[in-house]
Image (cartoon, rainbow, N blue to C red; front, side, top):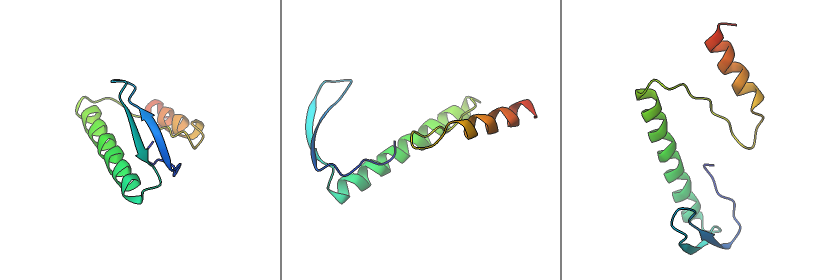
Length: 79
């Protein structure tokens, strides 16, 4: 996800470290920073996958996955 909803103050646990932090998702600066970091991670992942010649399919949680999969297979199977 590239954006975080405004839920006000929320206690978030880091899944890897178990560390808990209280964050204010209502803060516009927090949401902008979250989006920027998320997009940066996505760009870096895309760069690494492309450099390794790995195919990618972008599937988003707020949209149907059918069309991206159909486009991918049509492009790669020449259909």
